[in-house]
Image 1 (cartoon, one colour):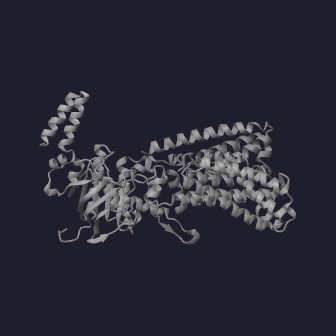
Image 2: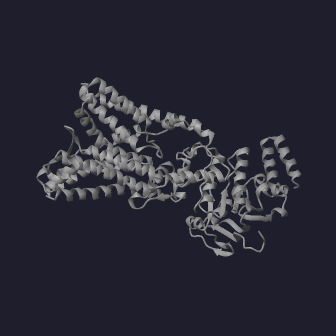
Length: 348
Length: 279
């Protein structure tokens, strides 16, 4: 049905929703504020932190974390969790490493096989969660433990060790290394190419969330999946695709790691899954789903990157990092809740 | 509309059984374009089953539906929607945290561009939301407002405007006024009148005869799955409708319950009310 659009006259009540309020209700505003505070703080305390090499240094951990936080953030907006996200980076890296070093499969083919495996794991997570209607927390905790066992057990059984390395001599390594793990010269300073992947992925995912039909379905599936289904949104399919998205992100991060370090530990990625979730929450993603931001999740990852390196530059004991994480998470959750209430109340 | 044109929807003696339970038995009514047919009944009267039979959720076990005079068989809610039968359920199928325009087009988003560049036409969605709501006489301050911040009546109006925009010819409203205060209920009744005046057929489900009588053209009263009658407005007065609905027998039962509980003055009041209704 086509409609002739009559532009209604400007409404004087719109003025009550001022610029400031519009800004405050954006989910990523807390993370942006936090990132600026952390940036200024460490820049004042340390010259190294604010130098170009320092920036390259703290953008690096932020980038791999950010790739994961973006995918995990989308999944959380879609109303689900994935506790197996961390261990899946290990699974992908180990698949590439073992196939190429032990079976001398071309590195590119190994990477493709790892991608297929990642998609299968994501599909498994998604289909089990949507079919059983059980909390994704429990289902993916099962996947997490299972994959942890497979990563360690199978690696040991196949290679006799828990450290697989030596990809550099295998066919296809050079070109794959260039795409996933090289460094880009920016002036006279080297920046890891993973930063480019991170930024591209953030832009693409944010566009997907805010400007596509699929994005609308993500919000709806997380907000109220029954209501979404009633108006014809394929909520189950949306969630399955989001789980697969997390797995693809884990594959990308695993591949970047194994190519950069020319090898991988069998325990790779374990424990990281909570950090992804924390980054997404700092970025304004609601734990209950239906609300959040991709850019925010990326900023959450940036905060992590800056703090993890900043603490080293100012010569503090690295153990304080965890305390910082905890405090940051609590502040973020409280700030998000408060700001959202404030925004909704003042818009009535 | 003359009596010779086939009605928009005709319901002929439909029944629905669930195992040994008779949910609906021999119920008939008609809905004409530009008119409101009210379906009244207490809890458990079969109103929900009736809606679901018309919305394509349940297929009636007996009887038939005719749309524009032709037999109608609905396979699914989607099928009903494609034929222009839109149902606005009590829970509204809206996501509180999402903006009005996102909710308005949820599941049927307009797109522009093609291939990988095919994207949600956000500008168009916002514009249409504003103008459709404006046509219903509702001035939304800001289409970016989350639906959760709207009042109950405003939410109903978004759902009704959405159904109208997506080409509904027959609008089924499931208890749209039941959870609302007097003023908000009045607002919703006005939207129902708007939809009717735009030429839609409306089925208005309610348990409140005072909401139904002013706006209805036809009244179907259900009780325990059976029809107590299907009346044109000229055939029934407000008092008769009220009596049918909250039948004198029920009032006396209620009075008896209150007697037992020792609430004498309330019981006496109910008894006199039952007498006034002429039972």
